Structures are given as C-alpha cells and as structure tokens.
Image 1 (cartoon, rainbow, N blue to C red):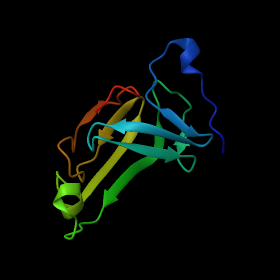
Image 2: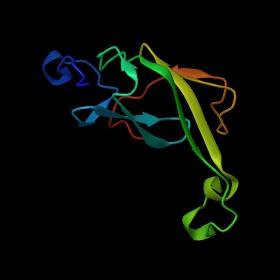
Image 3: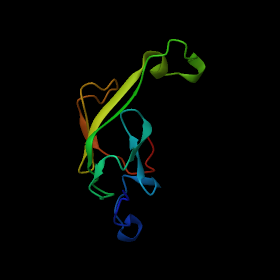
Image 4: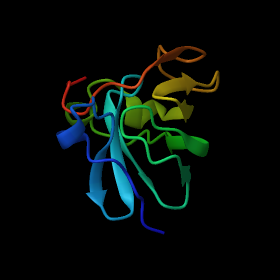
Length: 116
C-alpha cells in the first residue's frame, strides 16, 4: 500500500512524520528518545500534522546482561525496554507497560526535526 498524504511543505503545516520510503514513516518518540518507523502494515489516516495509526505500536528490546556499559550508558540494553503506544490525532498515548517515564501519559507527537 502507498500512503497518500498532503505535502506539508506547500501547506505550511507542522510535520510530525518523515517519509523514509514510499510505504514507511519515521517519528520521534519523546518516551524512548529514539526514532521509530511505521510501515504500511498499519492503517494510517494520511495526515502528516495529526497522524493516526492503528493498531498500537510496540518497540522493545529483551534484556542483555552482556551489553557493554560504554555502549549502553542508560542501561536500556542490559535491562531491556518497552515502548508501547497509540498514535491518534497527532498525540502519542503511551500505555502503562512502557518502561520509560512517559508510561501512562498522552503527549503531543513532536515535529520532525525538533530533536529529543
């Protein structure tokens, strides 16, 4: 499936997604402080300013006790992490099973390029 979206550059809207291919988008996650990519296996409303994806998005890493501290300063590889959310109308609803500080909260999806 190819996404059909308004071109935010010509409309002057705030982009909250960045295309990484014809069928995938990147968004910046304020919970993980990483970027995540969603592809066309999710249902997408096509709105770059107020995106909605369905179903929920889940990113995780199982614990790895052998992770080297110099490459894992925050311990997310040694301890494992989980980021589980819904993206609805340009907001991220972090579910309570997240392992970061935004678990259970809903926040605006940052604009692409805002930094984390």
